[in-house]
Image 1: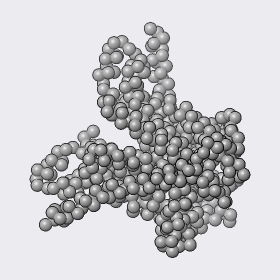
Image 2: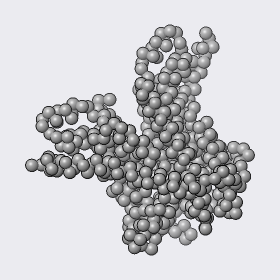
Image 3: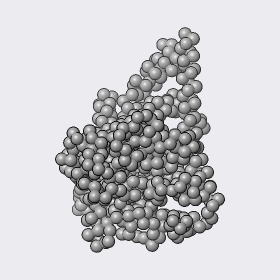
Image 4: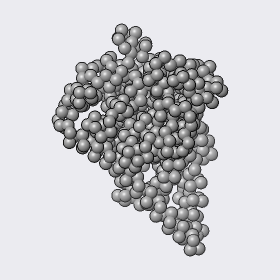
Length: 281
Length: 292
């Protein structure tokens, strides 16, 4: 009699079910904690005021705006670049060594630790290209970091587009680009959008790549151009949680809540787009 | 007509150019990390770096071993929690959960992946570290264990979703043949499905390992920042990643210390490159098994 039969089977199967369900408990507890402590700490003043008294009072407005600028910059860098590379892999290349090398580079870009992006961004954009710690250096660094996810999502979405659509369009006399632009891309759009949203959500929450490329410790005014340093939400949370003595708890909980609301909100939006798209199919 | 042809050609060449640019980026990342590391090895004996037992930047001692041990303990704890938990969760999601529960769990797991690492670091500092300190009666709750627990939850989404994909992508005939021979569901899962899905599951574990090794902010905030060689899961440690993040802000650009941090980066780069190449190999293997 094997342990996998009879009573043993029942016991093991119930434990699988219990562990399977419980493994998501920590995330529920963490989210619960963040909402429970965060919501009471939020006020209009907190969202719209600059930090005061060594960041212990006032709000986080410059950090919100800095994160917004940085996210926009990341989108501008990574989206066109990522989608065009995805197009190359599916529509414009044959199964040859170039495609294989590019696929391999994407796999490796995806696995590089975020702090290495930070090192590279500092050595290349900040110092070598002379951009200094600035929004543009941070956007380029985060943009490169986002590429693998966007490229992979684009590739999978394009592969799911039926061949008939392309052939019908080409048979009607459309050029390859017209087919790609007017037929293939629109039908792959939801899949690409999901990938973009998910990678942007990750970029907005990243800290390690921006410490040396853009982040300002304390800057109680807004950046004026892309060449300025900026405060950002994740770095601000890191600073007030570890570097500022006697930091009021409410201020930290509020910052935590705003950061999580933005990143998790983006993520739920991505999941929503994907589910809607899957239903339509 | 000609404008259309010209536009077509123009886009074709732009797409080729941009795709090639990806290769240049990876090359540049490697080039900058590598050349800066080489400047370090010009100043500092390479042997003392790899087998050096102390990392004290103030007295110019740049030994990798304490940092390596830090990463080792954090990774060991994290994998010890996340591998079994992810495997069971993936089996549950792929084989047992009803569609609605499955959807719900997947959303929660994706949300787990979306939590920024600085958020987990904050939870570690202000929620997790005190219970750990009290429970093990330690001087501080900032230990390798604290970091490992948080990183386990950070790597679970990667492991679960890739294992789940690998299990679900298996051809139905495997399961049906096993059931037809009289095996029950559990026997089928353990003796047939898991071995057949192994390459995909293993790839998931490797990618999870990569995330754990490369994670920076959480370990920087909760593992105590102590580069000590004689460490264990319950002592404060300092990982490879945290060392770069903690010290890069203070170094003089162009100093030996500055280049030393790039050398640590090169070690990390090499580990992640090896991890990803192995994972990629197993993903291809599992796609072959699924006949895709």
